[in-house]
Image (cartoon, rainbow, N blue to C red; front, side, top):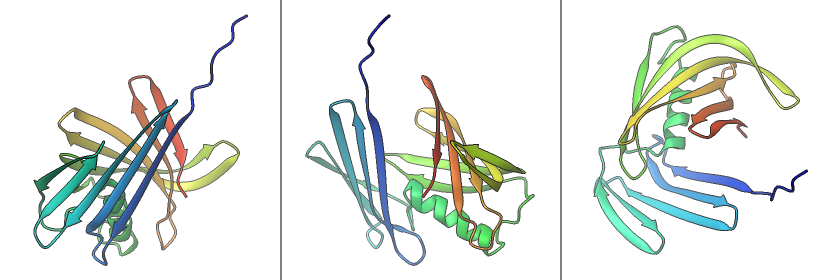
Length: 169
């Protein structure tokens, strides 16, 4: 018999974007055990810069026109699907986002399928998003409802220690 300590993990991401879904502000708060780390990204789309504040230190970098954070990019992709600018069944589409460095995301439509997380179950179009950045490539699976508004409902991400599966709200 062994007593294992509880280790709480909580990640919160907040995105503010303009009408074109270009990022204005992105905040990530990471809580792991007793440690909390918060990073704030403030985008100046007119000057093509982003200010990143982490642990009280601020850096500024150049970004491309209409730079997006990861959440803004997901909603941009969702909007393109909703307006049929990226039809289901196309081999892939691409996008880019900024999170301390530039990342390229490729979207591949896999298949419509049912996803079950916990006790909830949804029908959704499954996409594999391959993200290429400074640390190499990572795959993320996303399920998006096949309704006109194309609501994302679930995500699964592989990490070295295991797999994160989450419902999106």
